[in-house]
Length: 64
Ligand code: F3S
Image 1 (spheres, rainbow, N blue to C red):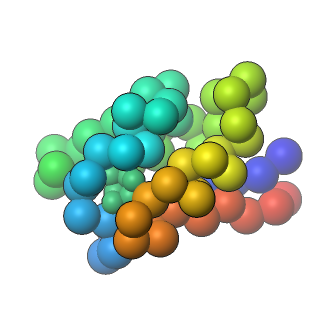
Image 2: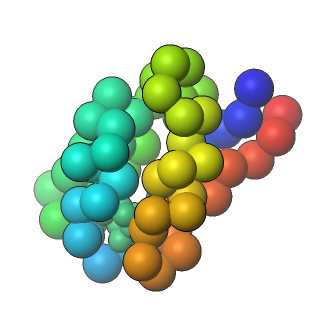
């Protein structure tokens, strides 16, 4: 099981990750993405697709 994180310093709020998986990512009040389910939604892509899609590389996953 991996744990997903959004680096708030890198995120530019492009929304790609939110469009991809709104069960894991949502907009925070600062207009950037935040993780609402750090274990991932468990059905779509284990967040690797979001990691690969973020244009600024703000998303990372960590094996536990
Ligand atoms: Fe931010 Fe990347 Fe998502 S820029 S909104 S973490 S796709």
